[in-house]
Image 1 (cartoon, each protein chain N blue to C red):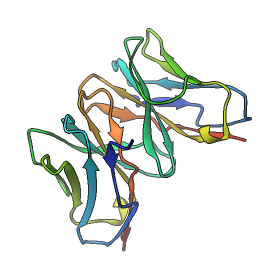
Image 2: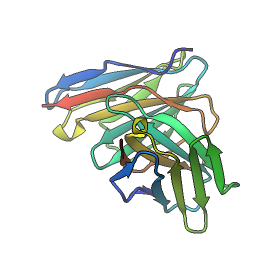
Image 3: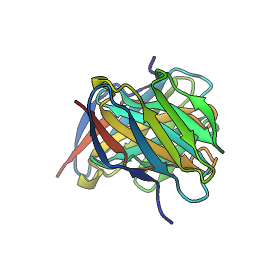
Image 4: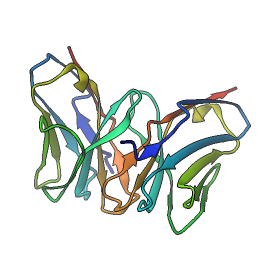
Length: 111
Length: 112
């Protein structure tokens, strides 16, 4: 049973435009949320996080929004760059020790 | 500071064999977690070790086991390999903080 879902397997965006990646979860006890970025043949690298006490966290071009009532989070990348092309995973946890990952969204930024 | 090191990077095994994968965490990290990544399934949690004790376990059959040594290095073992075990196995280490999760590059296991 997938507790974290990324319903869009892929997304294509023009360079300079906004990329919006979505993630839904089912467990209302989740308090910690992460986004990871993964290039082929590499392990995922941490991108940005948010805890349940916030509804927004920003780091440069990356912003994560959390809507706890809807059990939904999203990652906004503005402006999108070709180097952002990768697979993005969202992850959630209630304890911070075991994270549940989504199936990933493959982002392609077209120059 | 060295990152998370996983060895070997690639492995080909035959059905029925067993395999051991190794993970050396970031120095000072006492928590090591293992994940299996397959196309369409994302990262599936296998187990987490903290100070040589298995603290969390995912929903995998008993053929998947692990251990952690006193220096925090961890090994994962899969016995009686099946074709469906072909995957990228990722190890992540943590210093105990919820956001201190760093992944290694993974071991690509192919079962033929």
